Image (cartoon, rainbow, N blue to C red; front, side, top):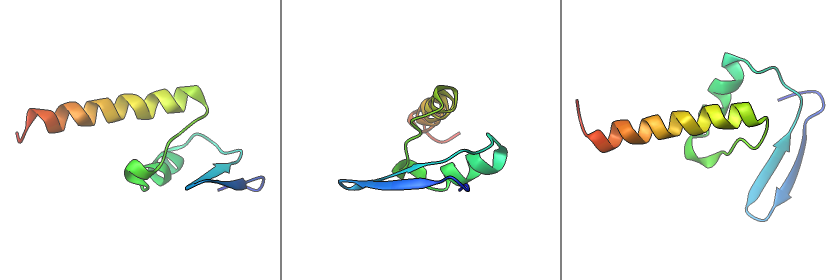
Length: 65
């Protein structure tokens, strides 16, 4: 992920931290984990993923197009 990446096992979770550029590639990488990832920081990126998840939920609740 980055040169200064660190990780720590926290119960059943793996916490990963590192300095990265907020890019399309990073977003793609995060999305590749599906529901098995949670963005903690930065808050703006967390909000972005939260809003995206809400939009997906609305799409699937509405049923097939």
